[in-house]
Length: 382
Image 1 (cartoon, rainbow, N blue to C red):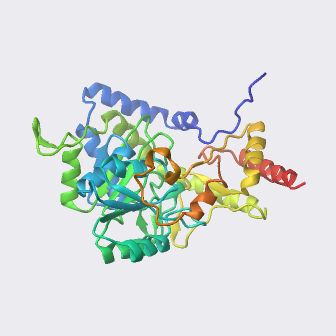
Image 2: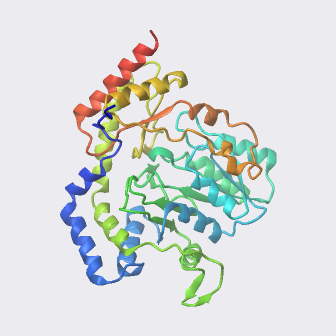
């Protein structure tokens, strides 16, 4: 049997590289010539550029987005017996960092429109179950749209909780004029290759306006040492490579243009798909800049498989982020708190479908995606 040729990928990183090939190659050559490959001047320069872009005092380069979350909680003193409120609809690392420290993730529900953590669900939990063991909230800015941060920040102030923003999918996203990663106590970014700002390997960043937290993270990322071979705490090895920093510095110059292209593609998708009564296009909150890390539609659960299969037969790649909520992951059994069944999250995992949204996606290919979706949906109801 001949395999179906992939014609329209979710994200075309090869095309992106060829567009900036000379700049990337120069940056890589610069690092190779320097002979300095871990932290150093290249990473420091990138940290300053990210801090300036986001409007924060500190940006600390680390090895991955997962490590960024772990280091943030470590710096805030989260540990055994503590509880951290978060969403069940996210990538695994959002909750695994909590459990790794001996703390308990508290899974509240999501907003069915934005798919982000629902402030009302958090409020109901705190009003009914708050104890001093609850230490923090991790809102996840999913798919490139910030959470509704004002009510979450208000709840954090009222209950003396720390807020750690999971910004893995939201570089460049804004909420009421504020950049993601600049609103909570600490922001955590991933530079995984598929992200809005992605490297050519793993990488991450911790952002904060608090001097003490920044210094603490800097120490924790190098085995808990301020001075070589003198370890004040049990930290971890989580240092950003100079090569990744140099590549990311190049891509940072282009990220706004790429984002605007994705926003234009999303607007065109919206226009084409909004007339399909059984399909929900991404909801964008007022005063928010959605960066469309993913363009994720919601379709009837019973039709999703047929729609995805029809798209695959047409050579169109799709993905489901995420097919199983965190509160149903086997490794969290007995290590989580579930104040109520997150019904919205349970429903959404069966209905979401992410479509190609690469900056290099051609308008004709984007129209083809829409045509296949409409045809497959019409056939499903016959």
